[in-house]
Length: 426
Image (cartoon, rainbow, N blue to C red; front, side):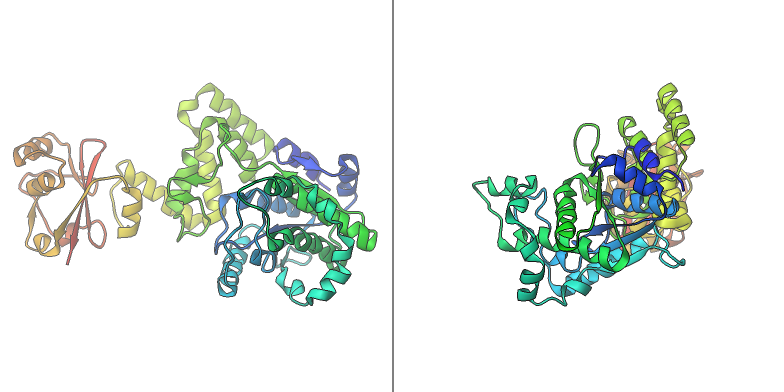
C-alpha cells in the first residue's frame, strides 16, 4: 500500500501522534479504518474543517477506509477546546439542518458509494439511545476525572477567573471519547485524527477504549490552519471562508486563494490540492525565481475551487475575475456584480431614466467618473470610456435597458481601473 504516513509528513500534515513507530507499522500492514469528527455549528463546512477532511481523503486514496462523524449529539454541547467562554446552545431544528448541510458537502471529498467506501455517521444515533444513569454506570465509571483535569484545554478554562466550565461542557470530552469506543466496536476503527487542539479529546478516547475493552487505538493530529504571521487562515473581513456558495461565492472563494501570501501558498498547495510532490516543488522553485507571476496562487485557486465547487463553479469564478480586469460583461446577475464590484462607488436612479434613454455623457457625469459632461466627452473621445467593459465609440451614444449588464446594473469604466455602477430601480 502507499505509505500514507510519509505522504502526510512531506505535506506537513502531522503535528502529534501516539507511538509513531507503532502507528507507521500498523498503517503499512493493510487497509485500516480511521475517523474524524465535525461538530455541526453551522449549515456549512468552512476552510478550517478542510484540513481534516483532506487528510481523510488522502487516506481513502491510499486504500484506507475513513469514517466521518457529524456530531449531532456533541454539537448539542459544544467543544470547549480553545474557547474562552461557553458556546451558545443550538436548537434541535438548527442542529438537524446543520448536519444535513455538512453531510451534503462531504460527498464532494470522499467516496461514500463504492464497496468498502467511506462511512458517514451521526453520533446522535448512538448517544440518543442511552439513558443518563446507564451512561454514567457503563461509560462514566471508566473515565477518571483527573484525566480530564490534566488536559490543557480544561485547565486553561478552570484557571480563568472570569469564566469557569459548566458541567455540560465538562461532559463533552466524555461524549467524544465514547465515539471512538463505539466506532471501534462497530466498525473496527482504530485511528482518530483531528486538529492539534483536539489532542486531549483524542487521547481521552484512546484511554477510555483501553479501560472499557482493552483496545489499543491510535491518534494523530494536524497543525491548525494559520498564516505565517500566526493569524488564522480562512478568515476575511466579512467572516469565515465557507464551502456553501450561498455563504462564500465561488468567485470570493477563488479570489481568497488567488491572493494568498507567498509565505503561505506552499503550505496551502500541500494541504488542499492533490498535486504530486514534484509538481508542488516545481511551483516552489518557480515562485522563488519569479514571485510576480504568482503561478502558485493561480494553481491553488484553480485546483481548490474546482474541488469545492466543481468545473462549473470554477468557470464562473474565473469569468467573474476576468470581468474585474476588463473582460466584456455578459450573463451575470446583480448579485454576482455586487460581489465583483463590492468596493466600487454606485448611484441609484429610477428605471424610467434608462427607459427614456440616458445619454452616455450624462451617465459618466452622474456616476462620478467624470467631473462634468465636458470631462466625459474628453474621456470618450480619447478612447477611455467603457460601458460593461465595451469601449464607447460615440459621444452621442444613448443607453437603454438593452445595455444593462444584469437585471438592474450598468457598469461604467474610465481608463483601465476606475469603475462605477449605476443601478436602475422602480
